[in-house]
Image (cartoon, rainbow, N blue to C red):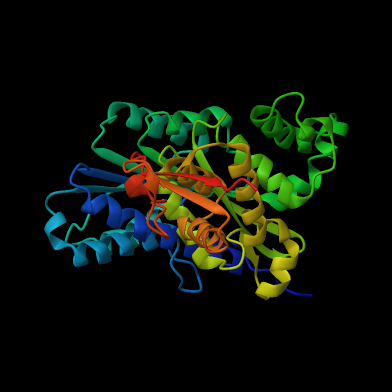
Length: 385
């Protein structure tokens, strides 16, 4: 009989991949915020932090976050005294917080950042973080909330939406999707068994009555991920992205990113495409990239090219602003759109107009990036045949 490792004591492969994702984004996030003259306060919340150090010696999310803060401040020492950085770690089990505190207090002897230790259950910690964000609703503050719950039962629609409401907060949410996907149908067909109540309530909270999930229609795991990603946008109020980590056929875990800021979204997309260079959607542990491409043919670049073509054909006078927004919402990078536009321009099927000069723009000048997001530089359309 194989002894299964306790995920609360050992970092399993999918958790290691999750932490790699979190680490990659946190490095980008802190560099951007530190270098911004307008931001003075940065708060990082880890709401279900675990023990911090696992029995195999590997670091969990709170230690990882501290190390990143320390390393980046070492790169940019002048910001140590001009920016306030808060690390707030919480876990419902007080013994976990004691372990985290013991480790972080040892590491933070030079006061790299302010560290606050909490031990609240899920209902209470969401209330308290929301109250903190309300009291500190300052345009010069930025907040990143990492939510890695022990399941999905602690996650409620109102809690997530409230956390995002101040416009200065981003969320990385990790969910074990396999169980949710496997039992989503029976959760509605069997309303007597109490073990399905939480899942049924979760789906009812996030989806309208006429949604395929509530109607019991068949949904594969990838469509299920997209449904949740769209739900976390709260009717397109926020930008959302997903990244899945498949340990085996029975274990799908998904990171969802939610942000009010399109630039934050672009940075998370860079992480996604860095970790999965073929599709930007996720990967299976132990599975090669070619097999992964076969699993997700709809998200290869050739499919994005078709989507972009249909978008341009359906919209006249498309600007660089429109193209940037379309690219990000479709979870691709500006370089992907630039590649496709260059190809069409070389094939002499694309018209690119310089708006200011009212004539053909310089070749390969598309201005699809955040720097020009509010600056209408070009108009793009297909040549009429």
